Length: 178
Image (tube, rainbow, N blue to C red; front, side):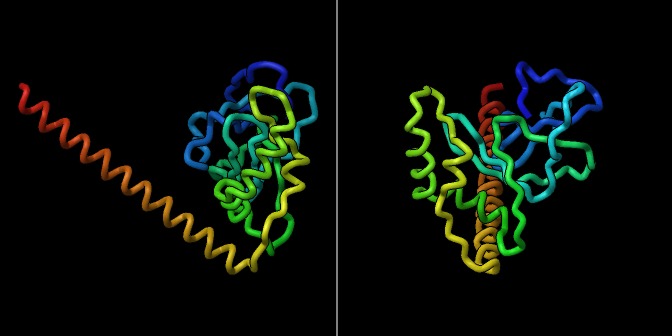
């Protein structure tokens, strides 16, 4: 859906996923804006498992839509290319992982976007659809996704530990300087 200006917030409108709402490949639901689409035909809503790929910006980003279970009508802004995986043989989380972590695929997208003379990179739908993506058996895709999720969890735990250590050191320093 193409918004021509700033998205005006309304209380019970259609929720719109924007790049500002994404942190660590997760949607931060408390920042998502709801708006009124007016008389225009509403675009297809996002469903769990839909792949969102950033269409422009300084860094490439792909993520899989996972609802907050509110069953509210949700769409993505035109800053994202929206894809729905229609085969049970392909795990959308595997596709997002590969798009975010494969240097070869990132380079293919970069080369395709380099042909444009814009300051902000534009990742065209065509350049994404022309990618040569390896698709191993579903069981292998699921194992890769599980490994990725495990590593992300470990990183979160390490970050929490570092934050707690920093808070402890600050507490000690504050106590000493009272």
